[in-house]
Length: 257
Image (cartoon, rainbow, N blue to C red):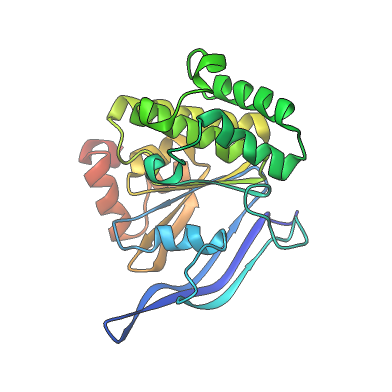
């Protein structure tokens, strides 16, 4: 079966203070249809650069080599329709002057050909799917009226409004407290299962990755250090760096089991 996403030899570099800084180096990675793949690593490991490269959102100044192909699509993807993207900070990604219902509906109008009535009905439905209370009322609210966790749920609703085949979630739980993080991770997994979406889940927290992912890819300094099925990688990490991440986030007793 063809993978949904195939990355081969992907390298990304930026110019900074007159010097070339490599953000990703020769990455080979596939994502299968319906697969949930977590990308983990410390800050600066290249995780978010990979997400932006997959979505075609790298700045024009980036120097890119290698390929990002979509074998199961057979064409270049369309953001919003084929790719849904949930960013780290929903306050920055949501428009402060539009109601949350308008923002979700606009995605449906653009990528699913709905009229406004249909799109608003879908927006209300999606607000319910992401487990927000009183969606008929909430769709008229503005982002500043919502909590951080509520805004992130709205951002997720907007990201899936176009029925994407791949959902990219880039550190979307990092600013939330532990209980809300777990709720959001459970929600994302449920939505991916229900809609048959592939998932690219970007995080520095291997504990969260282990809760959501079928496979985990470990990045360090722009390189792919290790990749494997979640159960295997958690039980017997092969690389010292992965062992260190496990010890830091899961605890030494959990790693040793």
